[in-house]
Image 1 (tube, one colour):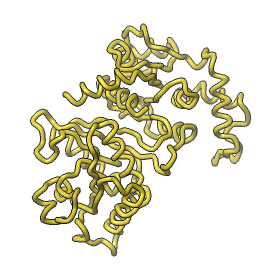
Image 2 (cartoon, helix red, strand yellow):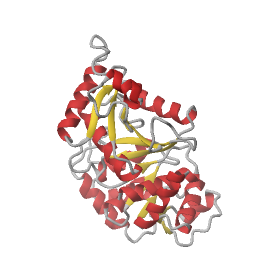
Image 3 (cartoon, helix red, strand yellow):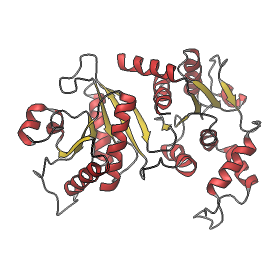
Image 4 (cartoon, one colour):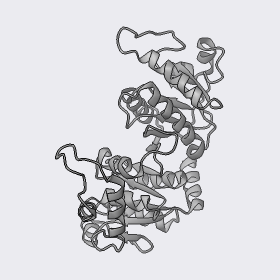
Length: 343
């Protein structure tokens, strides 16, 4: 697709270094080779020679920086970084400090390559981090939350998908690209969290997707047409989230609450919200919870033929992204390119 080609070209120009944490996974090893060969980014691949051999990959890794934590000269530096970042934190299960000393931190990171990758990023030895091909989202995000932490102005780590229209296009999204958030991390976000998600997704739309964001806060209700006050309070939540987001980012084109058709179809938007500049023209969509978001992007992907790039993590102080465990080599390459552009 033209959008993906453009994404890769922008990543090449950015010339960033991205750490891939899973040298034991064949797809990751193959992707590392492809990314370096094509000049998409510089790659640090974490894994021992035995890990990489056991993956079954026969890819040429010349040009890839392979780091085995067990022999890395920087292991002590990263251990000290972790110890300082978590000093005073108590393990809830044991009631004891997470790491008694630097030696304990080092023992932990030698076994946890995901945390090792996060520390490489924290130290400034890489520009971005990608993991999750063979680890859960929790295992990928935990190091980010513990040592990378959130960016100034954000309290919420969230995710979005960049949705790329099929070659036939879509009359409601003339740019051919849309952003959906949050479809992967926050299960039932509060109004405050949704306002953060909206602003972060708008930034992703502009910086990564290359579109001027027009943000719709989604619901089963448009401007008060529906009401669930007796049950879940989801309509008031989206109304409050819209209000908060407008206060935080008054110059952002953002409105709601909208049903999806009122958000994307001009004829419906004009009918249901005639005074809104966003209604009928939205390209960045904020879902009320993970149920709606996850179902929505998968319907778009499987029944509409759209390509889903992501989940793209938002709100971290440094670029850190999670892969699906069902990812392909091409998915990893695209995620690395996105991460490079976030840096």
